[in-house]
Image (cartoon, rainbow, N blue to C red; front, side, top):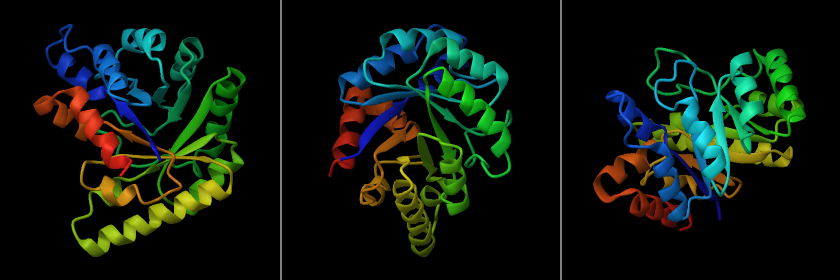
Length: 238
């Protein structure tokens, strides 16, 4: 059965809309773990639009499962990661104007830079995941870079508007996951996963962990975090 990690960025988005103290993503992470989440994910962006340094520091002291820090491959973020020591760092592309991460990291184009960053993180005792599109070239490059995990970008599948397009995207993800597992990489998946399309994705047995944020937090507004997390875990586990 695949694990479910919960991204609490959107809790911080609501807080930062008023530059207030609440709602606190740290409290949301606690409730998510209480409901059975097997990991907490946060994206510390360069512009600090939602998650703040304070959040990551406290989460490192309070998360009981696994803390996954999403970040850009910049010198500033590497230094923060080496100080905080999350369990996993997921390297992601980042644009200041985007609403959310728009696609996978181009590990082929940025292979040299990513190699340098990953070397520093590994020397600091931190496992590294690369957020990539379901493309064999990127999977093979991640393996060559000695990544510990790849997180397959499922956005194309989630945003498909026709059955045939969704089927095509599903097959791309399935092929990428099988290749990653064959090469010895841990396989995660995320972006746009919700309570409906996860019924497809859970059938890809190579996926070891789902990283889910928006859909769970959107439901949590209506039914509470604990119920929203438990419902998602139940769906993932069939």
